[in-house]
Amino acid sequence: MLACNVAFTGGVPGVPRSEAARLVREAGGTFHPSVRRDTMLLVCGSRPWPVLPDGSPSLKLSKAAQRGLRIVTDEEFKAAVGFRAPSRACFLDAFWLAVLSGVRRSWIECLRGAGVIEPDASGRYSARDLGTVREIGRMARRGVPVPALLEVLHASGHIARPPRLDLVAFAHLSPGTDAAIQPNMWG
Image 1 (spheres, rainbow, N blue to C red):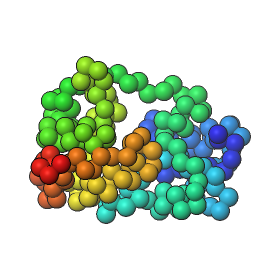
Image 2: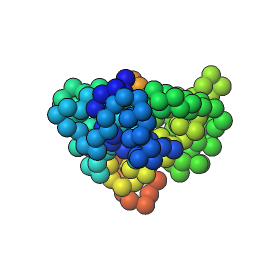
Image 3: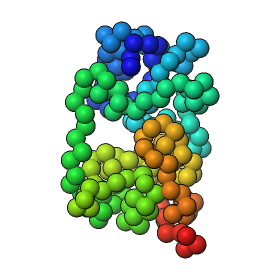
């Protein structure tokens, strides 16, 4: 997978960019800091996500999508270079996920309904879900339109299936307030 010209957008948690470039070279590929004509693969990191303040995709992600490049997540990159896959340790219920992420519990239920986060059979969420909810809340407080953000996360591979935006209505947030996501009363 990595024996080609590879670019990155966003950060790969736990792997500095210089180390990621070295791992690409060791796998037979060539690292480029930008998406070029000969780029074949874009690794889309999750810290930070490749989303601009207005909710649109980053320039690299936009170029990659326009050119039909293969886009992989940071987790897929780590697996390809032999990093141990992140644990899906489930330890938080919806209440604690809301408390630790700093969003209302109604956000948790709506994001679950939209397919953005997924509890295990016992209703517990993973550390990755916590990071996802924290980042969505942080970006929403900065004014990023949540539906646009979710579409970019799906396009970048961070949300496996298209978000069910028809199941939620996202209220516009003002800075410094907790977000008000309410179930869609018309759905």
